[in-house]
Image (cartoon, rainbow, N blue to C red; front, side):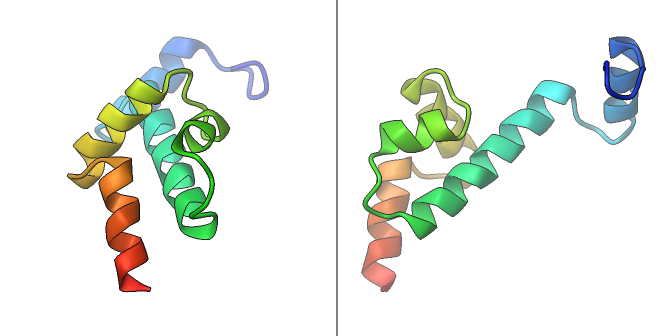
Length: 84
């Protein structure tokens, strides 16, 4: 908002035109980051991945991850490790 000198309402409107909201966009970015970290650092604890991805609570990370990818982060990691 400050960087581009736009109002919050203007930014929200721009996102809604594309069928999303600012919080949804941020959540998607965080989940993609978490997925990348999980792939690059399979030994990193999930709590640290959640924090590094901007989630305040690991439980929120787990719920959001499962909603997007259809499996828990733990299950996802187990499946990915089997592939290697």
